[in-house]
Image (cartoon, rainbow, N blue to C red; front, top):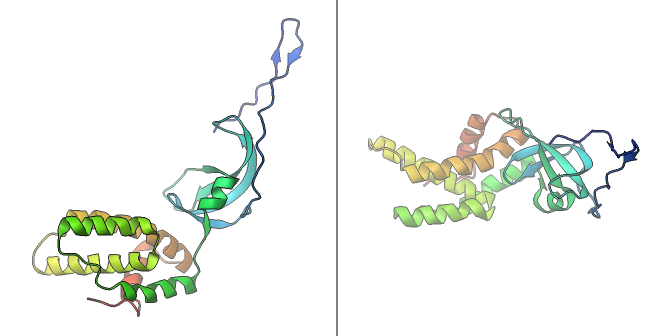
Length: 199
């Protein structure tokens, strides 16, 4: 967002007219600091480049987290009020967390539903639950079904493929960042890691 650096307006007799300062809003105590890497629910893995006090759309002064998505394809900068960021940002998983989630995913074996409509509804709910272990299991079962259909000379189900793409987007960016793998390597790793039961 462009900042206004114009000099104060001049009045009728040449005296500077000071524009009123933007009203200030009490800030929440920041949970994160500049340099922290966090998970944003829609932008994915982001680095907090600074905490900046400024007035944006509501013209009130407040402190913002300034976030830069780490993906190479993104050139955006995200500004988020500290109070909001404290609620929705979270620290990244570590490598031990990821291995534990993969092991736990076997607890959710049998997610597949034969009826296309019921399966789409169930899998769409899983996308929004925030349960990474269940999400991993869903990804594995969609891959298994894709392999079965390909073996039979059939095309993958379009609805399943759309859900798979969204699920892998949610999961793989963070896993790739933490494990220092490409997203392609992460996809293969998740499906072959010991503890992921196959159907």
